[in-house]
Length: 122
Ligand code: SF4
Image 1 (spheres, rainbow, N blue to C red):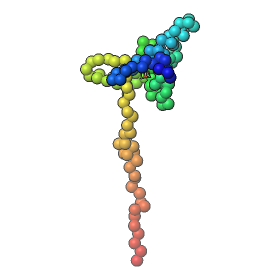
Image 2: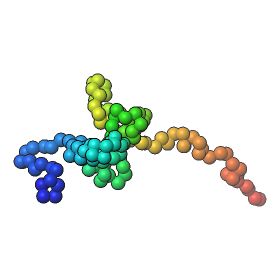
Image 3: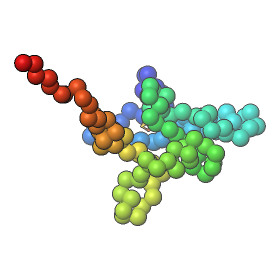
Image 4: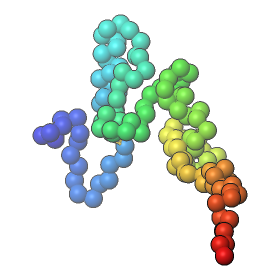
């Protein structure tokens, strides 16, 4: 509370869920409203998004077809949790990129050379 007045201090035994940084959302919306402009994509950053040095967290408006989050969600690596159950949450994750060695190994198979030929001198 002392460090961040936007965060409510709760008693013991209470687990807080992600609020999608509502305080930042509301502040960003208010700024856009005061300026008389539409809220631009990327104008609001969540705290975790801003803190992540690899920019692994993307936050935005899924109703905006040109937003970065919409493009990220359309990526083939994106998936929903419990997708097979039929729910469609707003959060998506991306599968881990794994090295696929098979094509690399087959393309680097050494060719037969004459270097293995042995010579015998008598
Ligand atoms: S910092 Fe990230 S995890 Fe925490 S409330 Fe904000 S959006 Fe949710």
